[in-house]
Length: 180
Image (cartoon, rainbow, N blue to C red; front, side, top):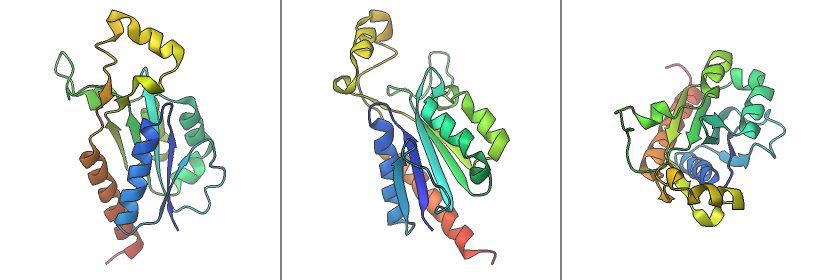
């Protein structure tokens, strides 16, 4: 049975991460489907899940959070990995030295850990392409105070994302092989 890589993406960057995870799982010998949480309605044909969301103001998108909450019983019965896409820039730490991938952990992740115990959660740097932004978002970026917080560019570390996906593939292969 395949692995579902479900995602919620506002401007496409998180979708691209999900698609790369599914492709990397496929290269590792695992069947994987990348699909938006908005179109997934039946989880019974999947035996593992990777669920990811774009993060805004330290929260997953509502569609992703609701998908997880609505399907928590199924998710609790199978291996699940979570990822978040959000911090922008090239610095791994903030001004006071805190790891941005830890500081950027969305508020919902603690709840998800309690309710179904995912195998892992990773925060990946995101991308900001002004051409993909809506009118209101472009206005916010015009304010000088937001420019340092919302730098333009693609900050995703594809090697890191692929390595994580390969680790998931190895874990799934071990689960399928059973006890030795």
